[in-house]
Length: 455
Image (cartoon, rainbow, N blue to C red):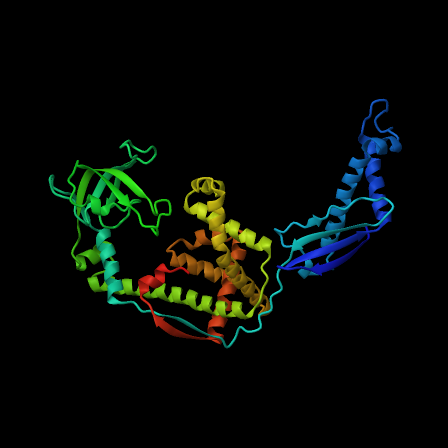
């Protein structure tokens, strides 16, 4: 089939592909379809394969034209994309299906003209990626950070003992409670009952944050109370509401923390002989975490600078796929799928759409950065060899304290190995960016705030 084609660039990295199929090819495709019909279709009064063409046309003319049109359009578009000479920059993205514009009409005596619209990979030209300047947070590991880690270790190694009957609950105690919401009438609100829920008083690790109401209670005591939640309360379902609750204290335990000494260090790991050994190990780990986080931030700051000077039109289909991916990731955090997450949202279109809409700026920025990275990888011709992949597998296994051979088996899968090589190439690129640009410490920030902020 011979076709004439014309590309028109549209907004947001879309293109319009206008196609003309010569009338001779239109007639040929139609006649071929008609021939197939005559061989297979049966009509009362005619033997199979013996139905005259004019009878078929009279009886099935519109259906024949519709099917022929579909086949011609599909064949013409497919032929263009299968042609290796068709420019790469004009090919559709894998997730952007070409859509026919203004359904064409089939005229057997005329050329067929129609257009399809689809998204293409955005053109990216990174004008400046060297000589940039950016700041990163000025952070160091403090004595408070070390003390906090040691407190966590003491908590993990604490002995939990039953508190004496008659003693009141206090902050730091481990409480086991039954709780439920109550209607104004005092009846239990269905599906709000929770039994034998255990938490440490003062941590706030409960939905309603009722820690203060438990303090002073004694075992087997029941209490009813109301809590009014602020408009900016973290749980949006509770924000701005008043809930009446019933709480029963079933059990009360007290934690006995171990002394901060050499014995504790040896309990943590026999490789530690003294408390100072444990402290040094913690400092080393925290500094490693800090170094990794600061590297991420430095790279992010440089990419932000490049985004500002590198205009890119993000295709709608690309943004849609990114948002769908984020929705699925959120669902996995709730141990469900995309549909299950929608049900958790109360089957509310408005709530789901509001969440997705709020993601759009960050998703667009992430895609913009990703396109810049891919462009630089290609321009700098960065590669990862099989030998580099092998060394990386060994490094990952040692870091995870896992069997190297098991890791090698996992990376025998070609697709997974390709992902590994992509990571290696990205790391090479980021090393170059960090080397070719100026980064200096800026505003002071504490370690915990830095690690808590993933933005």
